[in-house]
Length: 379
Image 1 (tube, one colour):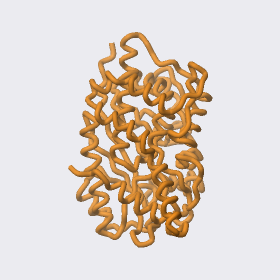
Image 2: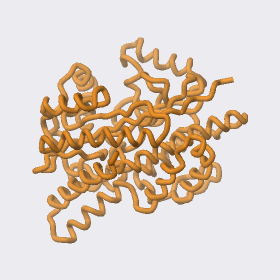
Image 3: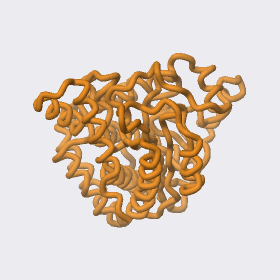
């Protein structure tokens, strides 16, 4: 019998740094800023592909509450250091009006190799994501749960959407980030594998033929981490609200625990084809929580609110065992007041109604993102 997984979690978030005067992305990140961040946050802070980005990662956390406390500390550290240099930090997956062709790459060997390999595709990657790691120690169980949890990825994506704008235009999508990210190879829904050995065989073909150096170059919506004994969910936008981020992490943790609980009773979640799940993925990307997703078993479209209630009820006992009922309950708040994508559009519309130009209104969106990204971070 497979030992019970620990279900510990870790959260990685990528942030954008903006000039407080222009509200545009910074072009060059001062060495002093990174030095201050490393001095305060240590190995929990790192650079990203663009100089206007930074990434943080929490410690290994036993509960969602513990993850919230550490993530709040990290957000505070980045925000305060940025402010000292005249910058602002925004937790969103795209900038409202920045132009990708004007961005400068971080100079190091890894990013140089990525630029050489992926060319124009990666230069457009002015996007940020949130990655949630849930520890599943047994490799075969990790693969089994990855196969099953894929059904729920669109439902989780919908709660996180924060990228409606691209280069000053409303894209009409709640998560335009995925449209950009999907141009990279080895992205999208994961392949279904029978076990860990089969997964390794496939990865090794790409490694041995020189296509990739290792499994870190596989960028699926969810993947077995190449560095930790975790499942790493990568489909989400960065949630501007820290409480939204933790609610999403609690939902993922609870769903994985539910699938493990079913397995103990010789049950499993029905697996559907990637073709069908892809349709829900697109709907979540396009509409977020505003429109329904397909219930494949019933062959019906269901309102997102009803599906979310079903999920919460489905994992109620799991959330109780994991100690995350309070954090999970916040998904109802997201449903009622909307995601960051809704908020950004409301701010833009309100600013235009007061007589501001579109350029001024987009800057108002940036100001609001800075404020919202740093809200509710008290220790």
